[in-house]
Length: 388
Image 1 (cartoon, rainbow, N blue to C red):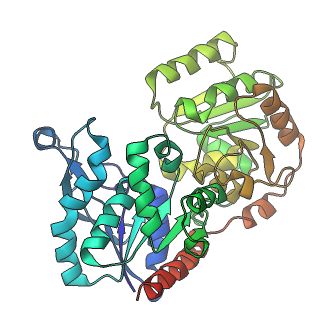
Image 2: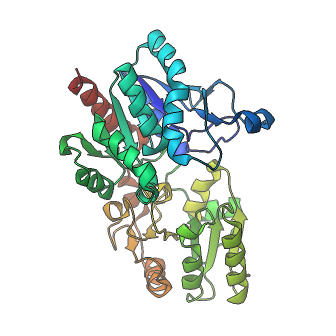
Image 3: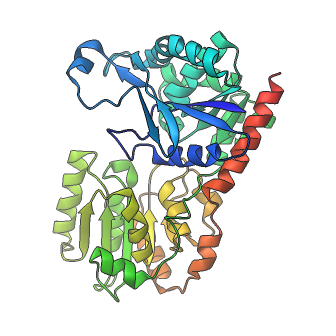
């Protein structure tokens, strides 16, 4: 079965960790016996601006053993965003048509409903090739933008299969009139070579973190929807020997400044460690170093840090967003707390820090990317044969 996967968000020579969870799933899928897979990771360009840019990937490269194509398509920066899906399809059509003549893929595999899903929907109609869409966290934003959501809805209603990262996403599709037989729930997995339990003291030593003290780790971008201010306010209520590690890049400058001001105002500067953004291969060390990890986002799809933390045998405290209620069993592998409530979060952190967790058991509860690839393979097969 030849598969052409589409994702605007995919690791490349310029942004090596962008969409790494998509690359991991597709790399595992490509290892399945009867799957031949290549990637179309298109690059939006605007003639004047793009001519001045040096940070765009080559037309073709190899990532994780996969052939990745980067055809260009026209778009307008910041304006007319509701046309991006159509620009995507129109710009890629010549390249995709030539690719199909040469390689004859059996199915298109789109990641994200926008712009990939909408663009691939139009390409599918032109080239008469079935397509599958994977829904990710974008839909919670997209649903609030009617001009975009109406197009995404049409793409979902006509997809041969929809892979949802959590049940709430599948419920959205049902309300749109998508038949249940086309809906599938498949969580993200973990790379077992990276995310597995190791000695906590050893991880802390490598990272230069305090030994023999309670340690909470939060891996998240500094943006308001990640709830980092609530983490800090809850942390302020914990015993003085507890330390907090905030791993991530500043995405919203004003919010990052507010975080720093709050840490200073609450007198936490000597207990909060901020190493900044970290290379992906170090994330497992931070998750292993933690007694507990925390993610109190306002919305998510299937948050990678949750499954990766559990893969390392570290319990998680998170808000009930996306797949979290399907993955966190209170008292068994972590706790679920309401959004924007530092008081309840503080109590959950105290409880988690005082509990004796079976790390090997926590790790064993999480699927690997190989497990996920087997599920996706079956879905793609079913979609191909249902379209004949």
